[in-house]
Image 1 (cartoon, rainbow, N blue to C red):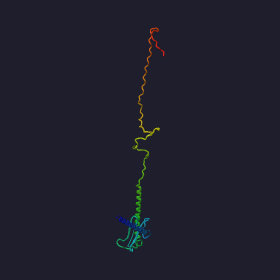
Image 2 (cartoon, rainbow, N blue to C red; image 1 turned 60 degrees about the vertical axis):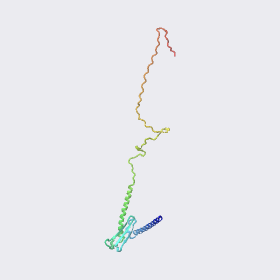
Image 3 (cartoon, rainbow, N blue to C red; image 1 turned 120 degrees about the vertical axis):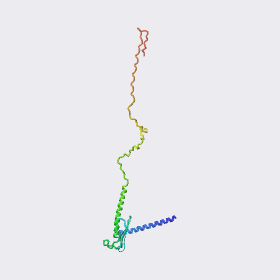
Length: 215
């Protein structure tokens, strides 16, 4: 079953590839009609145009069928109610597929190409305008600054001489006036009593004791 499906796919692929090559060849041949054949009047600038002119007996009908990569257009010129030869309508000459039909095709396709290019240009401009544009801040911001809401609750340790680091201590309380009372004045010393004199007798050098004054 799988082998049969594979064979069918291969056959279909080969048929599509062959059809694509035939179409490309036909398009190239029809392009020559516009560049160097009877349909030169249908050429639009540098646009890749392909087409085919056609004329019936006695110039009763004339047409041009062509296109580009965007669309295919068919132009027919003739009398709608009857077949009437058009032998002198094109500036005194017969109306063939390369005359009015090709010229009408040229004008129509020229308008389309201009409209298409304008749409593409507008689309390209819109795409550029939708690109993100960097916004320049109007206020200068210090890149090293940290918002208040993100300030760290602890500060980094600081050096203390050669003894290493220590955590910052809480800030000291503000200086206040010294509340220590002034020292009291010393109390006056009590004077020592005067030395008492030994009692003396009523006269002479009687029996009183004389104090020893030797050291």
